[in-house]
Structures are given as structure tokens and as C-alpha cells.
Image (cartoon, rainbow, N blue to C red; front, side, top):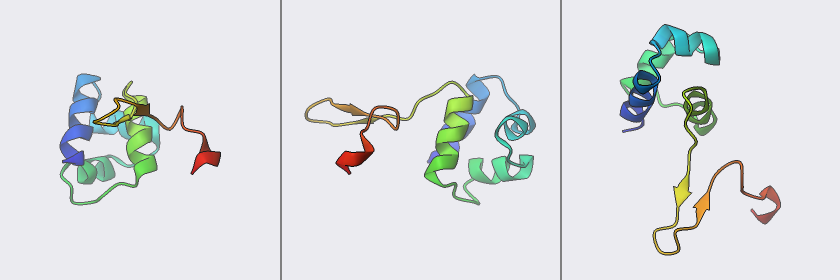
Length: 78
């Protein structure tokens, strides 16, 4: 599923695999492998690609609707 999300973000940002690879420092074939789920990216890689495509990763609590992101979480709480 993450591969489809990465591909959708990239395409909605009008970027080719080669372009997003150059921006993020990953090889085009690595981006391709992430998108086809041949290779599983680390969370930090997903976040890097999302940010470069203009997206932010959010975790929403279903009950409270509280939103956590890597930007608003206090690392000392963990």
C-alpha cells in the first residue's frame, strides 16, 4: 500500500521517478522499487519523499481526533 501512496504523491506533484530521486538523493530504480513494493522504505525515507512532494505524514487518533506529526510530537514524551 505504501508504494501506491508514494507513487500517487509523486504523480500529483508532477514529478518523474528520476526527478524525485534527484531531489531526495535516491536512485530512480530505488524509487521504482519503493513504488512497486519490491523494496520497503524506512519511515524516514517515506517522510522525506512525502515532504518533497508537499505532503506531511499525520497520525490521527480515531477517538479523539488528536493529530500527531513528526513536527508536533515532543520527543521527551516517548
